[in-house]
Image (cartoon, rainbow over the protein chains, first blue to last red):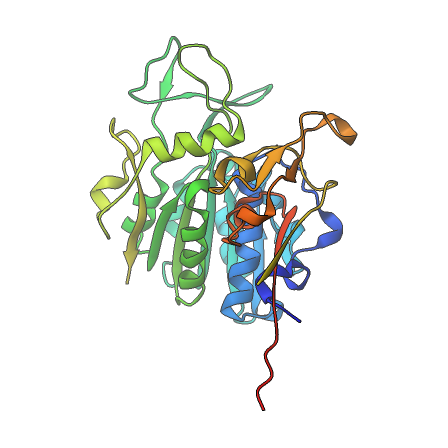
Length: 253
Length: 76
């Protein structure tokens, strides 16, 4: 009898002893960890060839689940510190697990100083949380949606990455996690700055009853609100668009 | 091809994504909460399984493994 490799997760670079993870039930961050491990295995990259980085927030714990050396930067100058660290990682491919908390903490100003030719892959779990107060961080209503409180402009990090000269840019939701795996495989083979965004909102409420959607219901929600964009259609990236959210590959150069 | 689905109860948080995404109604959630008070999935009809691996791929906690066993054929 032969057992196929796809049925043997013990061989993946996942640290089995650290499972289950600390994330909420059904959170897309857990999917990112598993899919990244599979992508690394399929690409045939050894742990020695990778250097993982993360900052603060839930997504910063993804490298903890992987048996690959990683560095956590809890610095208000995250991007600057990242650039300095990557310069000294002896040619290893840098993979950065970015969280919205990193962006809120550091601001986006540092992005303009990021060297677009630097060999970095950003995997951003955009949980659509924007508001930070003294008591913590909260979800807020995206711009142009109905609300009784304030609305905020959603991040358009994919658009920013394209403007910054990223070689590879893609956006997915947990429903398209299989597509995301192929994006990670492609991006790991690119030299230079790559960016992959996973839209995985922390909380989704039913507008009529304010009931929080379960993880399973959220998959149906993702199916309803997303559409596969035309390849390389950068104009579709704006999350303020009242129609469906565009997912897919947006830059490959 | 023989198929086996392994569910590691200790890892599962009972989100139900695997049950929702299974196209062939192989999995269902337990009606009664298990240890820790969470409802975990179990296999109800393995004969329907085509080993597509959707449950394995989507599980955020790597709690499901689809094991596909094939008979080795010797020629000569």
